[in-house]
Image 1 (cartoon, rainbow, N blue to C red):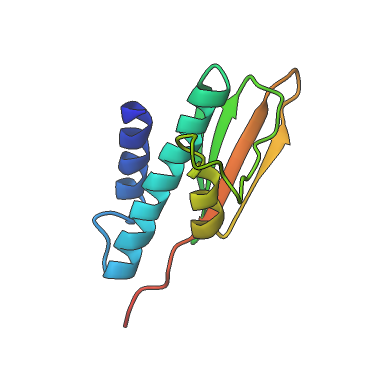
Image 2 (cartoon, rainbow, N blue to C red):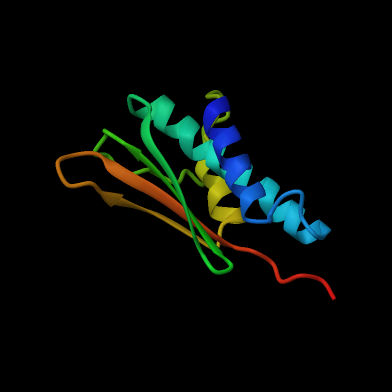
Length: 123
């Protein structure tokens, strides 16, 4: 997970999200780091780990994709069991991202993705 976090941090630096021109951009970059960690953690916990982490930028839109070999789509648990640890990952992604979802991969597995829009620069 540390490698995926550093990869993401490097991309955000290259694209000007970090160190960030203002507080909103820095906060959005920190959200991206957290959400990416959550997707990678889910792939580690519920599949055999991720085999692809891809970040793509379309103007102010950033898309993060995590691919794993498990065919089962992720499940957002709105009401988790208090006796079980975890269960917050997709809830964090759901609340912080502009959109997220899952798509099957040809030949098996899935891609879980999220999108976030970089905030406009403060005047």
